[in-house]
Length: 184
Image (cartoon, rainbow, N blue to C red):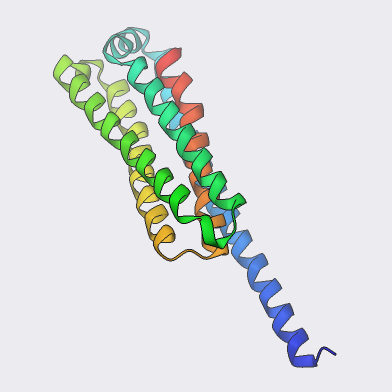
């Protein structure tokens, strides 16, 4: 028969889980709002500076960005596998998710070096916005990949679910960014 202490412990765990979940979703929505504001600024600037937008697009590499899209989708898939698996089998998919994230960062660094050498900075404000939006996202990818490795090292169910949720938010941001920056 359950004691009052057992019930208090169960209630405390449930309340803690609800608070953790609320904080997680506040973080996710605040990240989406921040990226949304940056992308709106980018879109408004492309409308106001058509010549700069054409110059920017001439220096971008949609093929490399498409490769990065594939890398992040594969990474998100691995993070989802980690959530679906039990505590015993999460290390490998979390490490693969991180590896795909770091591969994304390597491709992005290559893309940046090509763009800078080709003179993308001539696009002015749009080039600055492009580097701000993609650089902010890149920082999220590198940081998130590092956290994926930490969670793989010492996994707990709550941490796996938390980092997978955040990782999917990072993926979602890229899936919105890709067509706006590279395909319009």
